[in-house]
Length: 187
View (cartoon, rainbow, N blue to C red):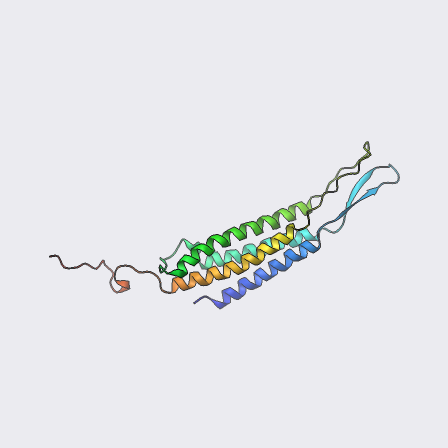
């Protein structure tokens, strides 16, 4: 049986990560070009940089959630053998899908946070062209939030399938009755 306490803790961490990713999308940095009246050059002025903190927070909460699941399931590679049933097959598939979704979500959140924190520092003095005030594209944190949501769903199903397969652990050779290999009579 899957641990309800672990599932609740992972749900709370995933919910916080999703909320922070959505908040980061809503509070992305915007920039405007301002002209200095004295020296007559243009430069970029950026507004609040709070989306970077939200993105990093979502990144860390999602990582904590994934770490809890991986510790509880022993990263699917350690521990005793699982019962060869449909639950084990689904656990393998969901483990791979969960890892893929997690990786995509973390890349989106980290790339969005880094790009949001980047501000152009140059000015245009000798050029008539305005400076390029680069900001993070709309939807980067949104994509991260979508993959946080998908990761949250898949890692719970993975944990439940893993727990079902672990309940009746596979024990070849006598199903745990004997400590040695059962042998038949020699004829």
